[in-house]
Length: 268
Image (cartoon, helix red, strand yellow):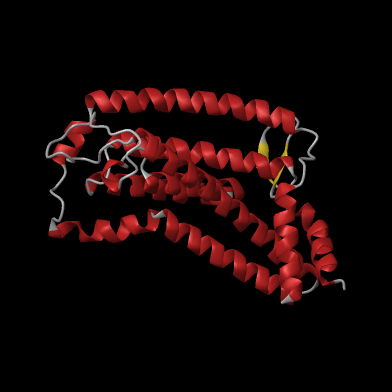
């Protein structure tokens, strides 16, 4: 238990230490350009959907409570932020417990895996918290609140469930998770982006959100996950930064460092 506590403490301490990567400025500039391009493109898409497609889409959906929609209610639960975060947290704890009992290469591998899960956890948590703040401030009504389809029904600073449509929390969590998992394990990219799109579509089909809400959720999720990725890369955790500012997953060359972390945690 004491070794697990030391490992956990060191893991969190690494997140708040000053950034040390020599190429973090290049990464910051490159990421800023990507943020601006993505935000501009999706902001235009959100505005266009509000004026042209939101009403058409939700009017075409089956009424709430339709019996045939039960598979979608099960499927959409896989995009619920609290479920995702708890699953990641428990995986992180399991990796920590196993690493505390292991030695040598095995301990280093488990610490490396746990650090990657730690990144994914924060990559979902940060945009989720930002999305909740935006929901309360914007106060957009969910579909058919008020009795009719009105994409411009707002009650700013309402902080109620009925006026918490923008951005979609499920889409936020799903796209943040898809970005984070793809960033760490690129081979999962296709499956993870398909998962995020499916979760977003279920939110529209279940009349929980307008199409523009899920696009807004995707924007917050991706931008937030990108910010967390930069935070980790600037501290040489999980990622490395290439000379052109590209952030890439850290290769197995860091195993020796992870073994050192495990060894120091076991020292009296």
